[in-house]
Length: 177
Image 1: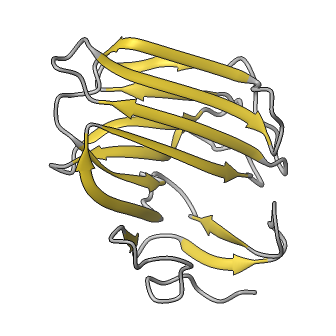
Image 2: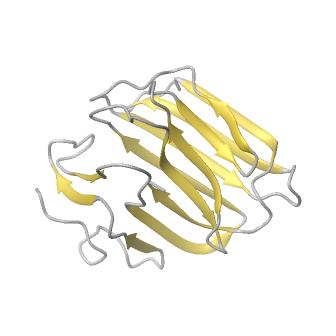
């Protein structure tokens, strides 16, 4: 509890995927935010779009991510909470939270979906998100689901198969920008 998260004390950093801890924001183990088990990672930043934590892997055509999140306050401006990046380290898509608590799914073309659900403060949500590069700028795939905690039915769902997700392989995802 309160121990800073690093590349040496994270649960599994030996499988070839690299945990990247940025200099912005705070990352620590905590029992106060535990959704399953006794501890979780609390990642926070004071303001703006800050890359707080990232995972890099061998570049592939598609990438999926699942993350639980909870906010103590809604942002004062639209804020990136998750981002997928290409093997050339370019942003290829993001999940953003708007000031009203709604989430936006973006690709290279901009916003492709906005949730009807407005996320509430101090409530645990789960994002399941994937992107696959396209053969050109109109054949990429995106899938997104927003759940309340461990619920099995999604609050919001989006699937697109004619998206501009870029043509480079995907190699990383980040919490924050």
